[in-house]
Length: 217
Image (cartoon, rainbow, N blue to C red):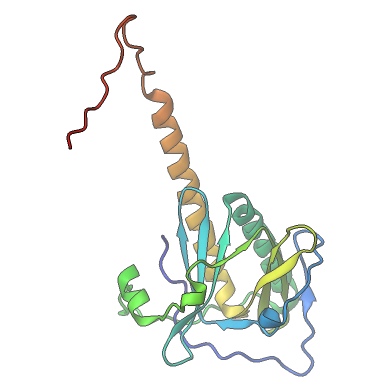
């Protein structure tokens, strides 16, 4: 679990001459369902990981009450590709517009615990299970980045979640994703090494059957 990347209220804006500069890790075509077409704005992100998946909660601190605007579930392999694609987009953005300046955070602001975060941010019932995605399309304008998290199932790929982030949030978001991914890989490698070092189970002597549990009524 990683801490929140940013909880500051960052206005969402797009100038009249801003044209999205779409750059994806690989060409992706997907249908966009009406319910996700407009997308959601995120002012902060939280990453949690388990043995088989990563969960990214996109938070919105502009609304009242504060809420989790979207929850996306990625397999570790997809997370690695997502990080690589996002770093590529950030590098291209910086070449065109200059490196985005992260928003300031008060030095005396304590880091909230996971319990405090979910006490302050409402998680709607329809988001409890999240939206699974196995590819991501990333693009940016001069002021925002957008993410189309895509589920590539037969017969038609579809956008499971569409997220907008202000450009100043992206460097911190990349750092948070990288840290979470590295910790996950280190933990999985450590567990695998421990399993390899464990002695193999010994077979019981021939003729001795394992005892059967007895049940009393």
